[in-house]
Image 1 (cartoon, rainbow, N blue to C red):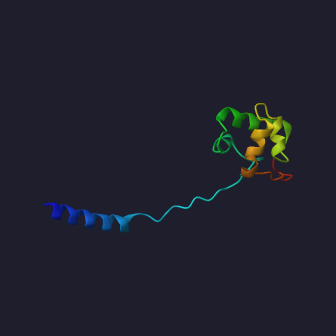
Image 2 (cartoon, rainbow, N blue to C red):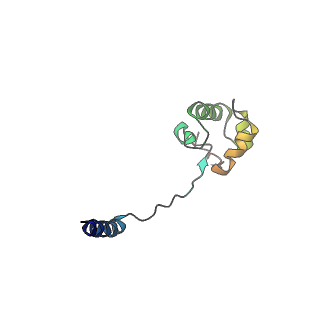
Image 3 (cartoon, rainbow, N blue to C red):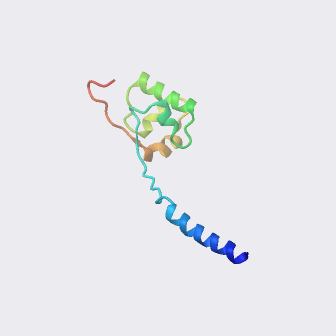
Length: 99
């Protein structure tokens, strides 16, 4: 009986090994700070919905962000928080036709 169990287990392990999907590769992407939605901001680590909404409102009221330090004009965003977001952000200048 033990031999049969080991045989079934060995065969099953071989079949499962072949059925496993290839390893997944995650590639980082950067966020356009001047076009990102609230949902996109909340995808960043440490950015909740309230802070994301404040960032989008500040961008609408005060114009596009030039760099990460510009995020400091948002209520609740300090220098350390803005600096921690810098690697995740791009600051694309909006085109003339885009608001």
